[in-house]
Image (cartoon, rainbow, N blue to C red; front, side, top):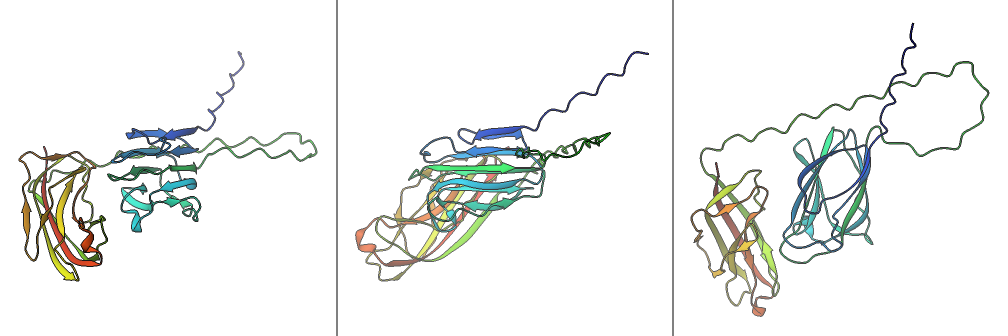
Length: 286
């Protein structure tokens, strides 16, 4: 009888070096590797996304130079798993690095985004998942054995389920948020409405803001809105809602920001305090 052919040798684990630069949702299967922004100094108004398919991955940061801000509201790197945010990071390498992130699912998503000003040096991270190669260890002499054990076959990595398709919205959505009290400083913008994003294209219908002058303001603050990086003309307004004119058909691509803001444009406003609210109404573009 002809000899039985030997089984094929399994492919070695895949390690990759990736960048989020210019990325809008690529997916890569890997058990280890690095990810960085790829710019040197990242530009303004970017939102980039990358998916890594791998089980039980550990993320460790080796470079971190993203604009520092409370809760990383300006520029940030976000880690998502199973459709939920795990962590948002920013800062500089000379400060303590963000703690390593241990994931438990079969894939994770990285989202890198910057606002309309100030570009820093970027980031770099390493990740290792189940099945990653182990660094070689010098062999220890052992006596020969008549029949060495057969290594167990590698455990197959399960294929992740596709992300759910968003359901149609039907009616328009209304997002209203309160920013609370803020003390303004000269030439500093204060974003007081949590950023609104959707995974589908939307059409903005109305934007309203409201402010109340408190403290020692010599003049009222200016308020406006921000849609996908474009600002409205600011207006002076106290103690009433103001509806900003939004051109018919104004659209925002999936993943871009809709937010309202208050901005101090006068040197006399140092120490000025305001209470602020905002309301954005939009609908899914079919």
